[in-house]
Amino acid sequence: MKKHIKLISALITLVIIFLMGVLSIQIFGEYGWTVFILIPFLIGFLPPFISGYYTDLSLKDCFGLGFSTLAAAVVCLLVFAMEGMICIIMASPILIALEALGAYVAYRVHRSKSPVTPIDSTMLLLLSAAGFMGFDYANEATTLIPVKTQITVHAPIEKVWENVVTFHKIDEPEDWIFKTGISYPTDATIEGEGVGAVRYCNFTTGSFVEPITTWEAPTLLQFDVVEQPIPMNEWNPFWEIHPPHLDGYFQSYKGQFALKAINENTTQLEGTTYYKIDIQPEWYWKNWSNFIIHRIHQRVLSHIKQEAEGKESVEQVVQ
Image (tube, one colour):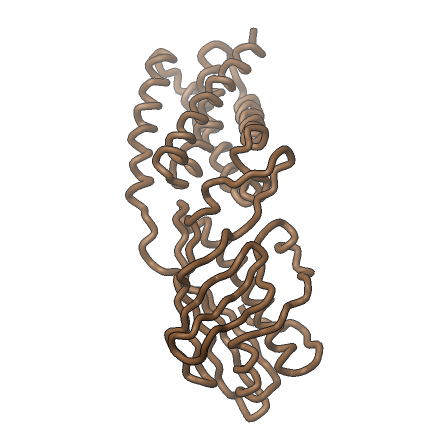
């Protein structure tokens, strides 16, 4: 009986979080607090909370039931082609932490010997969850996030400038992050010269279209981003997938290259990307996006350094 109660509570939880996920992502178009805070908390909380009314559970039982339900939820995401492994891995720290918190809260609730019935408690919890979903609309991305990366190039500033505006095909990456499906730059071309010219920074998933807004050779190149490709190709062991978060939830708005002559044969080169991420909680996801953007900058700046110096150089990026 004890095992059946645990199984039933896990199945009830999976149905509830599936409906909440579909409502949040597919209907409201939000990857926010509901998906990455509320749902993982409920995955940890609901199974031991429901089971605890019918059988006595230790703290270890609560954690085990919560983790088992989380594992089942991940398998369902993959089997039903709803998500890929890369996003799940990125989200795993916050998912595991909140699942564990939910399991612990469920354990403490039952230790308090609340007289409320399981049906009343579950309904109250779900009504509270429905209200919580409103936070998804109260935390829209509003400010641009800058990511700056610098490198020192042992070449005259004019030579570095030539390789900033356009650059030839970059060698295949050795960096592990680009072997996961994350899109990375391959080369850059430009149509025209000066303000109004259009630069194309080509990635493995498509091209960033970048109209030039400032052309101050050889010290400053600024551009807007009017088109961009998807940020990655998600990997799923069962299907080819294209989850909604690949379209528009990460948006680059503008960028620049700033060059400063240290002396006649040494140049400081800084690349900056300004972006928004429409996935909550922003404080968590921007750590991932900043890390990836730095690695993209490093790939481009190191290639510019190599081309400008005319020799193979060691990557020395100050982040």
